[in-house]
Image (cartoon, one colour):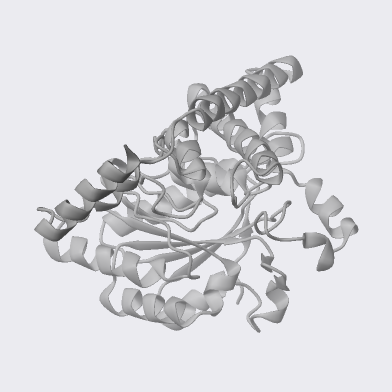
Length: 357
């Protein structure tokens, strides 16, 4: 039996009480602002790449509710193993916009000093593990971290993000099986955006849903409308609470759609129709949440436009500051690599500095 598609927001902006996370108005506005910030970042970063000012970007337009809603459900102490499309999770957990933008430029404004390709960020202060390029490699890592937490008696949860394409990998099977056997406090969050780059989900799995795969590993699979901010928040929050309480893992399938390209190296017009995009654009997560906020009387159209402009200005300011930063000094290659730099590399660094004079 396939899991039902859970939703909270109705067409008229009202909420199904059974799926309502009962967030206060200030939290709703906070989440709406983060969604706007994420979309503004997407639009600006794609423009920067197209104009040759950054090298690469992975947009998440259309998936804002999945990222922001699930990220908000996390608690301090939880661990995050993201994929490269989860900027929103990082932002809502407190990762600074300036750090994210600086990482795209890879200059002196980048905490990683240009050593990692764009869209591959991390932040130890919020337990956000570094993004990896290979698909789904973060899943066994997340389960390992969750198992360690269980052995230590820590009442935390670990969330692992991946796309529908990741569910067809060996890493997915290994992680799911281990999590099921050892009842690790893991939440597997699959953003099913219908495409693994160019491959439709219907061509990569015979299962009716991604969520139904959890049954084979002995734990619960939940399917949620990924464009419904409130439903995503509640489903993820419930799964995380169950994990912390010793209830074992959960697989969450958030059904959403990637409106833009897979990355700035991709041309989606080659593998999907405009009609398909237009149909999903009608389900834009912003339409859902703005109707709800208007129904509550806490945000009208003018207010929404003003907040959208503020988000664009914040992104533009971060880009201006980060782009103006100088290049990373070549000698920084040796920093953060050794506890004590070996003598021969010290000599090479000295030679490099003299050559620059």
